[in-house]
Image (cartoon, rainbow, N blue to C red):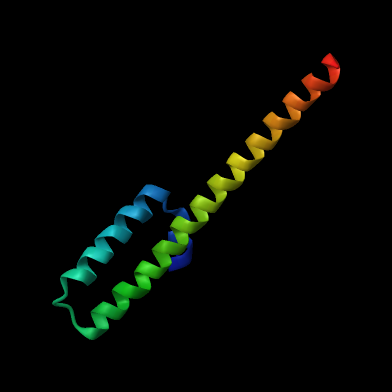
Length: 80
């Protein structure tokens, strides 16, 4: 399984927690340039996973709110 396939299977909380760990490791220093670059790249991948999850959640929320507004709009039309 490729890295992107693995990343797609990560849940939001898993990706967020790993991203937090990556940031801590980068901030702590003490890694070689190569290790730092690998951590940075992993952090970028994890941030994309989190962003996709959040965008998906936003789309679902927007759809639910739109349905609710349509439903309440129908009620107003039948009353008036």
